[in-house]
Amino acid sequence: MRNTPHPLNIAWREDWPQGWPHFFWGQWLISPLVKASKPLDSASDSTVELGSDSLHQAIKSCYPQLSFAQLAHLYEQWRHNPALQQELNWQALMAGYGFRDSEPQRLTLQKLIQMPSPFQAWAHHKALGPKDLAILLSFAEPNPDFDELLEWMAHSQTSKSIGVQVLEIAGELLLMGKALPSRKSLRPESYLMELEGQRRPLSRAALENKNQELSTLPWPARCSGRWLRLGDALVLETKVMGSNFQEVRQRLEALSRVFLAREDSPSQPASELSSPSEGSCQ
Image (cartoon, rainbow, N blue to C red; front, top):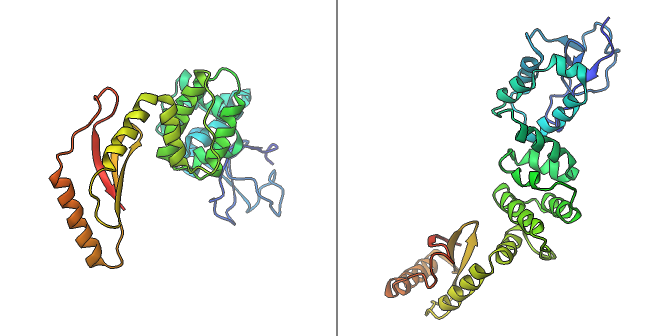
């Protein structure tokens, strides 16, 4: 007979294979708690006792990969459970998943747990790490505007690269006492540009001037372009439309002649506008 099992709080285990038995290490249930035909406190075919030397090794054997967000849930259980602290070497567990155990990282784990649940799930699925979530440490108290932004990011299926930038810039604006721009009808990419413009108004003005200059070029039919900011980089996005490959090729050749005829040079000082980088063609 085993003592009453104590499930470990590991979130988002929907990929755990159905039909597998329950895995134990001592009194700790490592696998997800699912309905069993026999009590878990009795020896039966529905339970397996792991033979690992330590609890952190047993967890690693069951879960080769755990996200920082999953570890946040387990850490919340660990820091409030003296019995678990005696059994689980937290530093060794973090090292096993590629994280360095430190006071800032533990604080980040605690902060993440306080964020809206949809954002926690988004952070898990996008594999955000402690550096990506560093802005959370800057908020001493809950911020409703920030929480609303986090939920919007999760529901908008924001990509990791865009989301990390939105987190940082929006957090900085709120810490400066500024209101966030409206997100109504905006995609995450467009909202990032709004945030950039509010944080760096001079850069936004310079970007608008550069696009105004771009509009004076003799664009071929059904071709257009614009400068836009992606993070700290400035990229030229060009659009070429055609009904077949030959038309597209002809318009690309015409567009190339336009660019070759004009020596492109930044119209703003480097301190106000980043140097152009590689353009994108759609």
